[in-house]
Image 1: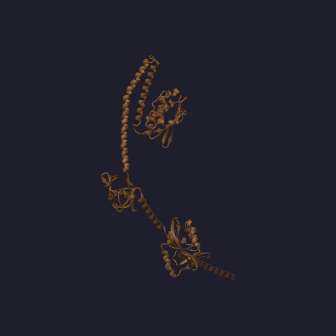
Image 2: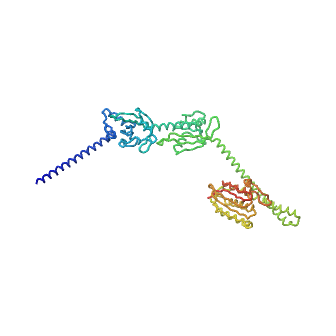
Image 3: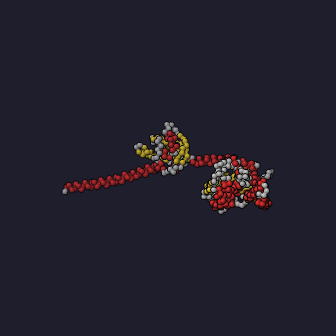
Length: 543
């Protein structure tokens, strides 16, 4: 029975020890939690002490009662304050520095100050910490908040001895507002200088119509110093028969989203009035309240006179061109009938008397008939040339150049067969040109290729390609070609490089082509060498 009792006593002792151990663990956990709360309170400034992290772990240094007021003062400062060791470890940070860095205080204490320095300023601050001179140091640095925002600051470093440990107190002043103010001052000074030196007459008025700023050109235009003067007194502006005063300007400014322009007359007491272009822009506050207006006055008197003179010249030119067209019509009508009579009677005379007179008389009759025919063709070409300026300069419905080409080739069908010519073409575009004008261009150029052919059968190719928003059409042949010195001359009126013996014509065909192309805003040119064929190019608007 005794062994059994002994075992029972041992179990009771073990149970008692286990209960004591659990109570001890609970006590230690409570003390640990209390210590952690204390450390947290110290770090956040709730308890007057410092926590210094070192090689032996965290050490707590209690502050003396007299230091409490200073602790409160530091916490309430507008400047950021941190306490560092020589390695840059943050031992303490006030709430202002935490707000500046946009980081909670508890995550700042125990980290290194390098965390908040701009990379390019880190070496300089390290040299300041490592300095052997235990005296106050000042500098300007660039810090970076946790969201990356750059913060210009002024720092002041002071060496202290806290509880036998050497620390560095850093006072940090945020310079963001100061830099902003300096930039505003510089910008304002620059704006004032630009305004004063501007070549244009520029004035700035407030909501009452008083001139706050004025360029030298505005002072000169007014003929006197106009600063702090009413705008209406400085400039007597009229829009036709209505005074353009500040009431109208400010009313227009309130209704405008941006700049508005008016053409006004400026009346002077001692010289003729000037025509001005008034450009006005409203100046608003952040609350959408009108502060005033910036007004630019540009003297356009000479430009208006030039425009009026140009308009008069254009009117006179149009009237002159109309007279010339009427003259051409009249001449064509009045001359066509007698020329036709000369042609008919010359042909009748040739038919009746050819071979009955001598050989010389037959030659005279033939020359007379040919001259009458050429004169009739010349009248037709002149009339066509004058009619190019008639009608609209653009068309709403595009014309298929392929259809126009087919009509022209059908017209030359007999000549193509007779000379064994081969005519090829790229797919041609839709052109915004009068159909008659396209046909005139192709008729003249293909006709010239057939006329000025070489000994070889004519080879003619019509090409088409896009060229800077226009269509470039080319008509190439293997004819006799044209020497480079005549490339511009061939587009002149009545310009012919050959006599009428071998090659007939009036010398107006290429001039007509050139005038048609210019009418639609295009250009025409030639690439050719003697004996190597010709390539005429022209550009026209199209799809």
